Length: 154
Image 1 (cartoon, rainbow, N blue to C red):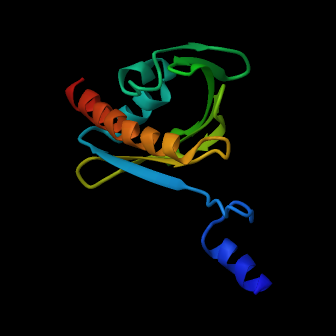
Image 2 (image 1 turned 90 degrees about the horizontal axis):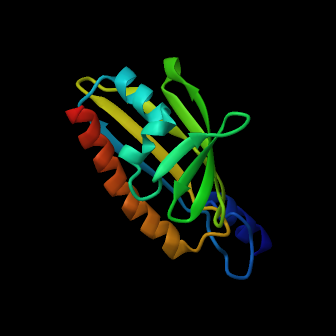
Image 3 (image 1 turned 60 degrees about the vertical axis):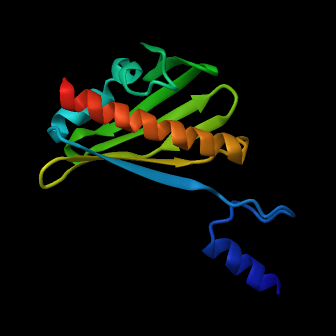
C-alpha cells in the first residue's frame, strides 16, 4: 500500500504527500494572434507594455536592479525578471509576488502557418489558495484576449 501511494503521487503530480494530499496545479493557456511572431515577442518582452494587456495584474512597471523590473499591481509591488531568447521564441520569466510567492512562468511565442501562438504556463505556488489561482486563471483569459486585440489593432 505504501508503494501504491508513492507511485500515485508521482503519476498524478502531487507536490508532496500530506494528510490533505494537495496536488500541484499547472495550467497552460494559448492565444492565437494574427500578427508576426517577432512583433509579438518584441511586445511581450517589453515589460513597459504589460500594462496594455496584463490589465488585471500590472498597472505600471519600472526597471529595477540586476535585471528585475518592479510591477505595480493590485497586490502591491511585484518583481519580474525575463529570461528570453527571441530566436527560440522563449519568454520565460520569474515573478515574485509580495503575498503569494515566487513563480517560474514559462512562455513561448511560436509561429503558426497563418498566425502566432502565444503560450503561457502557470503552476500554483504552494502559499496561494486554490480559489485564488482559479480566479487568476479566469482573469488571465481576459488578459490574453486583450493581448490578442492589442496586437491585431496596433
